[in-house]
Length: 496
Image (tube, rainbow, N blue to C red):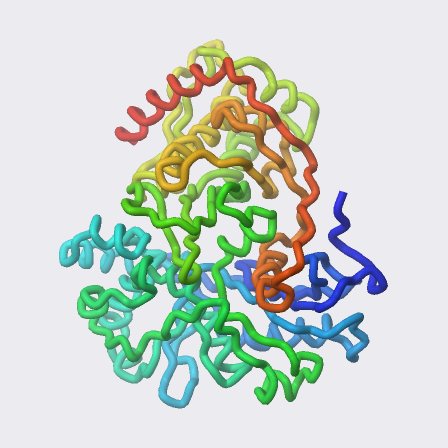
């Protein structure tokens, strides 16, 4: 089994630094050429979003800059590194926006992916553009998480700020500007704006016109190969250990998560099972027609991250425990037995849209449905039905993934929910009718940022393979049960 935290003497040079900006904190760590963490050189600065009942979800962009400085000071130490740092990989939560004035100062806090104040502008834009054509060209749905509705919202609700704005930046772009003196917007992050063409990397003119923004106010998409030298920048003056490194333009956390768990090639699906869930795949082939339930984010001239997500994955488990007060303990043997047992037609059919539907039909107003519940239904039946519902949510995404990229050769999976109840993978493997490798990688998103950096720092070195905790094989005779369930799931979901 690969060791993912190694002592200095085992580190293989060159070194890279991985930086991850998540919803709960800023992290940094040092990695060797095989993407293993080196020593105890990792640090986290915690933070939280500012939220309000009107849909506000923001964070101070300058606070993030200072958190990165604090993390780098810890992980780089006094220069006693077991090698030379050659690259810095950097990811943030995807979809973010900061309005910046001509002096380079932030006029707004960073508006995060969770900010929904622009929901009215989503409807307005949908009446002015061809939504299906936009999805095909950008690879993104028209949604409050993306940039165009937010730009229109700022223009209408904050006209003075809009008028003073010289440039609209993603969070990672702003951070690079403050630390290096040069804004650097990675193609993978620009794609998450929902405003660039997935085939060319250029902004969609009609979308810019619809929101009243000139292209000069948006950062150009920069591929990973066009990394910025750190030498001669303010960052190098502050941290001389980084003088020989390059800074990779920021990527989104979804891409980083896939890279971190080992979903590196076109034949591998990466599945995340946290509060929300997702399936992602890196493709280096053209997707002539993008299935309607998927997104496709350009990474560089040859690669695209394709996939889809659901809002309710681990949240379903939490709801069962907390709201229905189901008397089970996380990780106990009862859930293992429950989930590995044969399926039963009497199990409740659950549409687990507690937070609305994202992939595959993007109906935000949808809600959960429980069907086939009778007087004899037990809490165990309800729990199994709820987790079968999560498995079916993945299955409906998987069907469209196959349309885009074909059958996967391998599935790797990680996430806190599966770590809590690994037995549920029996349901998912049976539903997908494919084996699943549950892998163990701490801080996988930050590791993914480091893996991206290693493409530039050590292109000829293979990264260490993520250790497999468990491999779950499907019971293929259960496939008909899940196919029948999926048909009923879709019919009920259309009514939810």
